[in-house]
Length: 480
Image (cartoon, rainbow, N blue to C red):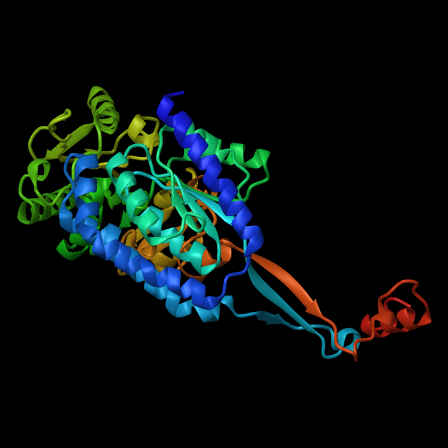
């Protein structure tokens, strides 16, 4: 363990105990307090947008400023504003029916109670959105939170630690930066809830660590998200929509298009439409200023190994841009958008989430082939279809399972602050965003308030003839 991580763990334990103690003293903050916290987020993020963009650019080697503003700044501010708008509705008691013969005018309701101290381990690809975004629902639910930013985005982590520290009391929200040893320690602590965003393999380790303490988890993991095209949907407009999403973060997005299914007789048309859009929109994809770099050489080498294997297996590989450039400390790693036609299912590309500027393309002759192929794999974070044939859209939707589903679009289910976002199976569990996020980070406590006209003798021990008669009437004579 490094000296830095040793110090970070000590810092984490100190702030964790502070937050635990503060929660016991003030466990149910008022709506006014929660509104104040949520109102502070847009100013914090927008006021430091330039610094966050510079930090992201430093961590990636190259990250376009507008991409930061669109996906890591404005979206977070909107999420906080929406949570504040909905706060009174979300926190209201949820009344339930009671059996009037027994309970009379008694009240039964769900009360959404703060869970306590929540840990958040965000991923490196959206280091601001995945840090401050879920914080909106955590604070709306009245919790305290400690955030451990990814060690792969240290510059962003430093800025977040500073601006969150300047905005919130550390007994409410704190940021602790550190490496792998800190991350392992973080996931093994006695949280009231733990959120992790990242790979399925690391998510499994996080869940095992949390299970030792019976800590509830929300896991936002990866997935090989398929995108299906039917014949009539192969239009320039739909290709622009799909490739535009693939370009987001240069494919380094958990809900991005992982691979496409295209009618066998139209694969050349598909490839040409993709080529035309890339050339007309960004020119040389590898060097385009609109496209961020591959975050580091580790990810660059991983992607390169996928392509090396595909070429060795004789698979057709089409590069849309100049040759890939492996970066160093002074230059970013860049790759062309690369189309791979029908890679082998057991290849690295076939088995692993791409998470980069590579697009495998699988051809099909029958739509049922697509459904069978998707069903044979793990449940993805998203499934997308471009089609004007409602029958086929419904067939795909009803015969597959995924965290999200989009028609004539991709990935947009994760961009809605009004709608819960998450995975299923190996792509994750639990939800954040919207009311689902508020409830994820709340304890739904069931409450009863007995009225004077309640007749509990019907169900209370010792049971007698009154209970017998009640059961007889309630079951139509089946029990007597």
